[in-house]
Structures are given as structure tokens and as C-alpha cells.
Image 1 (cartoon, rainbow, N blue to C red):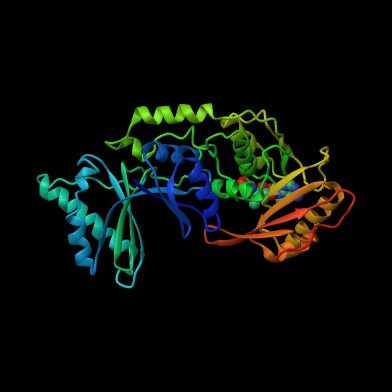
Image 2 (cartoon, rainbow, N blue to C red):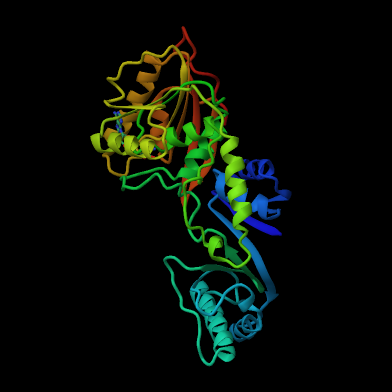
Length: 383
Ligand SMILES: C[S@@+](CC[C@H](N)C(=O)[O-])C[C@H]1O[C@@H](n2cnc3c(N)ncnc32)[C@H](O)[C@@H]1O
């Protein structure tokens, strides 16, 4: 079957590589995503194990529509009953990039009306209900000019969710983006890893899972596909079992610092939830005062971007990050993610790599700094 996988801009290559490992064929990169072919086994593997994916969608109908009316009549002719029963619920999410269908919400409503009217005409005026929160059949409508594609969302929720973030944190990093920056950094899964401003611990938890080849959605329950007629429960259980067998032992140390007590307790809570609390050590301490007792290591972090800080404070913060790297972290390499490109300059070390990315609509950059032992200089700047 054809499958569409969506991700953040800049993570397409990583996602394609992950899909290849999961057994996907005919992999093609598209804007913010990848299309590929795979059987049920491959799909189930992707659902449980892809780290950088946000949505997995299966295209079921494709047609051309020239007007709103045309969209309605063509959508009404589609055999929706092959995908859902009258007593099941559905939702419709429409994205339109078209000069004809300029209001995606309205186009989505036309498809919803068409689906309901088809059921009504065949079931004594009865129709399935809409459920936007937890639908049995989450339907996506993509319109590109006149081309309409109807896709089914196999999860019904964004796949960045792994189930470990139970409590709110002020500025958590999206889990798929966190996994993406760890993979982009080229971290070898063996070097001890520090996030000196760890917040709710997303980077540490994602890294600990990567180190063990631990499938990020192993503990997630109730994917929409589990309620579909053609869901192969036996195969699902077999794929889960196989993925569990592929988990590898890891002896890497993970450490996090944060000045916020609440953040530290959140990291501890999530680490416990993922059974990673014996691997991840967190300290409620100011990074600039924390003692470093590692000779070398890898740092990946996203410091505050500055939304809640005054300009002087954010400049001071990034200056202090650079000073602390130079003073106490020689022999380390650090990867810093930020949307504050001005503040980056105050780190005072030349980045040896700059990777532009998107955090939803926000432009961000991942920058690499190398603190060579015996030298305060970082490597040559690369633009
Ligand atoms: C953008 S958040 C990090 C979010 C984190 N990656 C997550 O996924 O939750 C930045 C964090 O830096 C922490 N922080 C700010 N200044 C700090 C300092 N001097 N030392 C340690 N942590 C600090 C804040 O408390 C906040 O939790």
C-alpha cells in the first residue's frame, strides 16, 4: 500500500532513512514528508518505531474536483462504507492549497456532508457521528489545486506523542524534533550525554530510547487503526514482540541540569514512566554553577529562546553558556537549538555547523560547537 509520512521541514532525510530500516520501499521525499510503499507489517513497524514522524496517512481515494458542488457529488460517490460502519465515528481535517478551494474548512465540510448523505441514503436517514477528539476514522482531505486526495490517519493523533509527557511544561521541545536533532548531531549512542538546561527532559529521554533502540511508541495505546475492520491484531502483537527483541543494552550515562525544580521533577517523572530512571540523572542546579565531573561528552540542549526574558538577560544567558563551555567543558562537543539567531552570536564560539530547521512555524537553527581540550578556540565557522 502507499503510505504518506509527515514530519518537520528539515527532517525529511532522517525520516526516509528510518522508513528504510522499517522496511519501506519506493521511498520518495516530499515537502515536510516522505511517501513510500509498505505492507501491514511495515506500517505497524513505522507506527511503533519511527522517531521523526508526525503523521502516517494512507491515501484511499484520489479524484479531480472543479467546483464545491463537484467536490460534494464526487465525494458522495466514494464507497465510504468500505472503511467504516454506521455506528463508528469520524473526523475530517482538510488542507487546501488551491485557487478554487480557498477555504479548507468549507471544503472539509462539503466532504463531511457528502459522507453523511451517502450513509443517510443507504441507511434510512441514519448517518455516522463526528467525533473530533477520538474518532474511529480520522479522515484527511488534501487538495492541491483541483486534485483531491482522501487519506486515513492511522493513529488519529500526532505521533510525536510517546505517552511519557503527562504533565504540562512551559516550553517543551516536540519529541519528534528532539529525536531529529539528536540523530542530526551524529551522536554515536555511546558517548555520555548532557542536557544542561533539560526542562522536562525530552532530549535526554529521546536519546536514552535511541541508545537502546527502544521503539518510542511501544507503550502508546489506542491507535485509530486498531478499530478498523482490516486491522491484523495477531500481526500487530508479533511486530511489537519483534521490536522488543530488538531493544539493545546500553551503558551510556545521561545527565540533565535545570534551575527549575518543577522541570527536574517532570524529567524524573517521565524517565520513570519510560523505565529509564536508572539511566537518567537530573540535578536542580544552575548550569553555570554546576560541577562537571566528566572528562568528555556530548551536549545537546535547547536553552530558552528569550520569549519570557528581557533582551539583556537573554544575551547574558547565551554569553554565560559560551563561557561555561570554554571554562569547564573542554573535550566536549555541543549542539544547541535556538530560534534566537541574535543570541547565538553571544555564545562567543564559532559554530562548526549550522543546520536550519523548523519547529512548527518557527525558524530554528541547530549549531555545533567543539571545545577542544587545551584550547579555548572552537572549529572554523561553516555557513
Ligand atoms: C526551552 S526550555 C528546555 C525545554 C526542554 N528541552 C524540554 O523539552 O522540556 C529551557 C530550560 O532552561 C532552563 N534554564 C534556564 N536557565 C538555566 C540555567 N542557568 N541553568 C539551568 N537551566 C536553566 C529553564 O528552566 C527551562 O526549563
